Amino acid sequence: MEAWLHFQNTSMVWVLVTLVAFLIASWINRLANRTPLLHPVVVALLLIIGLLKLTETEYEVYREGAELISFLLGPAVVALAVPLYDNLARVRSMLVPLLVACGTGAVVAASSAVAVGMAFNLSSSTLLSLAPKSVTTPIAIGVAEKIGGYASLTAGLVLITGAIGCLLSPWVCRMFKVTDPAVRGYSLGVSAHAMGTAYAFEYGAIAGAFSGLAMGMTGTFTAFMLPPLISLMGLAGG
Amino acid sequence: MVVGFLILLLFQLIGEVIVYMMAIPVPGAVVGLVLLLVALMFYGRVPDSLRVSAEGLLSILPLMLVPAGVGLMVHFKLIAEEWLGITVALFVSTFLALVVVTGLLKVMHRRGDEDVADGEDA
Image (tube, rainbow over all chains, first blue to last red; front, side, top):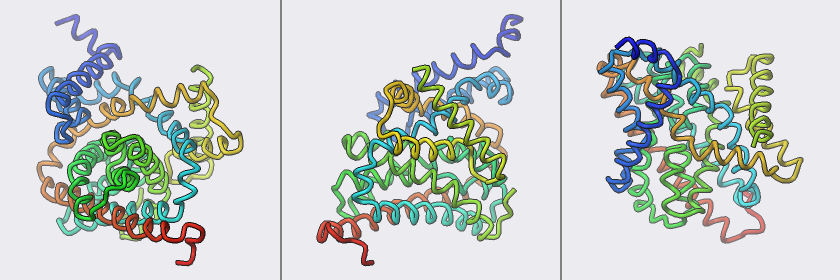
């Protein structure tokens, strides 16, 4: 017990816990035929929450311990420039449709989430945490902090959004009779960010590349678009 | 590998400095992403070490999302009170975004196929 109290405050334990939880979650997801309902990220964070509750550990202790992993998010966002650059030629040929779809999709995702939330009388900090939820987590966290939402709530909502997007996408594609992998991937990337991208790779490399592209573009665009949109919808930005 | 990681961190730092100096409400890493993209366009190719670092980092991106997601536990009380609105908002907005993007691309992309040479008269 004394040993636990000592190691509880070291990074080693929490980085280890996070890696093990992620591996277990990936294994469970494979067993369940990769269903987005049991997405590895969602399962891993539930496992860790369970462990923290069992050991009566505060989130702050875990957060500081796992800081080494979270730190990598910043450079990972910058790294999105590489797949974006790789697909530059393809992007140029479809530039206008892609830009219009990305911009409209991002505005629709954020404003409809806030509008529905308003209809349900959600508190304004919940609304501000909802607004960036279609964007890849590292960007969403940064945006939530900038506009005055709860970064940790946003992070969770982003992950749930990702799972919902993967769940609804095949259905919407059937509705529009879309078979083009580029379109499938791109719409997944705009609405379901990194989780959509991981899922899009199951439709093939083209879908995956377009999804990654959409994720990067939507994230970048939303980061610049959201602060003015928020004040336009009558929510005070912080 | 080391050089590649250094490039990523350096662009993030430049982004953070710009955001801080100009007080713009955008994460510094996003500005770093845009700057790196512009730099790559000028440079004309992706240096090998940068590619190794970037692709390595992006392949474990889902793992990095976990610690922040665990923060949901702090908000259990708030979620218990507002779960219905949050759930409906997430489903409706994600569905609408999918419909809008898929629909727009289907319509515009088809038009693009018909006259590839000139698609700007809209």
